[in-house]
Amino acid sequence: AIQLTQSPFSLSASVGDRVTISCRASQGISSAVAWYQQKPGKAPKLLMYDASTLESGVPSRFSGSGSGTDFTLTISSLQPEDFATYYCQQFNSYPFTFGQGTRLEIK
Amino acid sequence: QVQLQESGPGLVKPSQTLSLACAVSGDSVRTGGYYFNWIRQHPGKGLEWIGYIYYLGSPYYNPSLSSRATMSMDTSSNQVSLRLTSVTAADTAVYYCVRERGYGNYRRFDHWGQGTPVTVSS
Image (tube, rainbow over the protein chains, first blue to last red):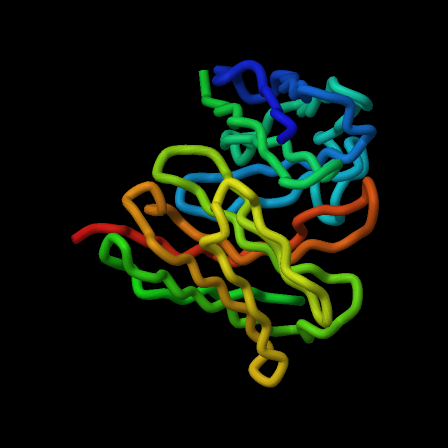
C-alpha cells in the first residue's frame, strides 16, 4: 500500500498567517491526491482534488500543488474557522490511503 | 443535494458480526459514475478506507480486513450496507459512508455521512 506522510504533525498559527502542509507519498502517484478538513466530532470535508482543483464552495484562500510524490496544501490567510485537522489522501492505487493528519491549532 | 445517513447497533460483542446501513437520499445509488465507500476512523486516530461498491459492479475491499468485510447495495431502498465479521476491539471506530465521484486523478470523496460510532466490547 502507498504510504502518505504529512508534515508537520501539528502546527500553531495565528489568524491571518499563511500556512503550508506537506504530504509525501512513498511512490509516485501522479496528481491523484485529495485534501480534506475535519473538525472535532464532524465528518471530513473535501477541499481539493487532483492535487490542485478546488472543490466547489471552498474559499479561494485554499490552494494545492504537487505531482509525483510531493504535495502541499496552502492556506493563504488563516481564518478562525480554518483551525481543524487536515488529511491528504491518494486515489492512485488500491487500497486508498490517507496521511496521518495535520492538526492546525490557534497560537 | 445528496445526503448519506449511516445507522448501526452502536455496541457489538467480540467475535460477532457488525452490520451497518447507509441510506442515500437526493440521488439514486444506481446513478452511473458513483461509487459508495465505507471509511472508518479509530478513536483519536486517522482514516482507514474499507472498500467500495457500485451499481452492477463487484465490491472491492481493503486487503487489511482479511476478507471479513462484505458490502451490498439495495436499489429498492436506495441503501448500501456493510457487514464485518469476527469483530474485535480493533474494529471500534466511527464508520462513515462516503460517495466517490470522478475518474482517474479527478476522483474524490465528495459527500460524507455524519458517521456512526461502533464499540466492540463484551
